[in-house]
Image (cartoon, rainbow, N blue to C red; front, side, top):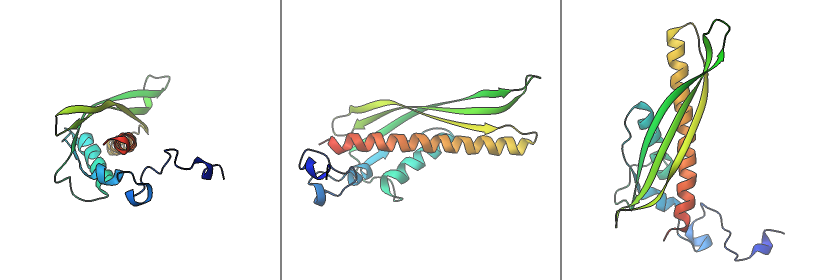
Length: 160
């Protein structure tokens, strides 16, 4: 009943099609966004996730209206330090600085930062350590991709 009272007050579902709300389709706008290459394995994982999230699994944008440029920095923080000084746990930190460039006039439409943090356990086995870190990197990249998709969708829902 409360939502029904909102009427035509500007509230509408973010991913609703334009036939329902009369507003431009955010999914179509996301699909018209090019994601620039990001160096490194984690950068490629982040880029692939963003392309998948923006196109629904399709190919990259053919005639993009925007280009998303991302610079990432990675670091590891030791946690759970034992009395002998060895770390039994770590936190993988992924920081992404992004800017959304409008291609028709080469202006920066949106810029900001996003952060992903993921913990992983340290083991005696080298293979287990490598695998645990890789999975932590992937979880952090997914976190950043989800955050960026939400922020970009919110911006593009109001952009002309």
